[in-house]
Length: 142
Image (cartoon, rainbow, N blue to C red; front, side, top):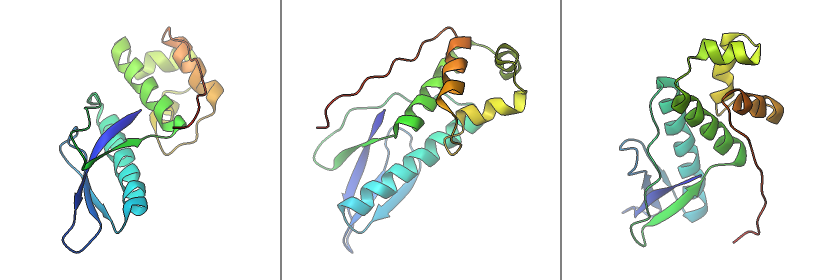
């Protein structure tokens, strides 16, 4: 999962970064590498905020020119976001998902928490409870 980030050159050097798909949040970096790291951290923060509020995530837009970079979430973050979106689409309540998984309701929030290192078998079980299946594939790096 990746979102386009606008990397605007800063007057003092480096970049000011924002994600137009979300409409809030700004960070900056002194060089390309630092700016990408800061952008990734900002993207995780913004998405985590949407999840905590129970809000729908916007679909990633398209890059709009040379000042845009695609910022990719880690595999664990991506699968958690996909689980959150599948949960929202299911119309279930957290209590019902917890019942299906035979776990306390308080544990459900950890499944969607991007800062919690949830085990893959727990994520797979949650997808299964939602009638979904996880497939993994590996491809060559670009």
